[in-house]
Length: 102
Image (cartoon, rainbow, N blue to C red; front, top):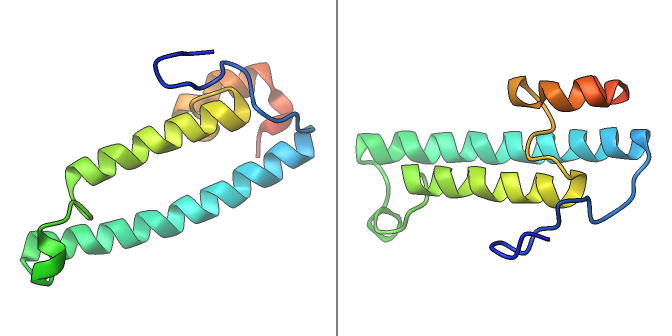
């Protein structure tokens, strides 16, 4: 257990390969949707189009984006025992667990 952020070094749930693949797919769909919304808010922020009540919040900002990546990292670590479950950064995991290649 990592006491700094209270995240276990092993997954918190035991899933078979198909369950892991399905869960990864569902999480990626949700993250893709959230990313599109963040991008729209960020573009509106850059053009000065956000309403006053939103301008003072961090949504659509760089720090908001960084926080999202941190949250994704800890969610992946908790559910799968790995920080990255897809993409370039997760190639080591796929080499170790070839059944997860999509």
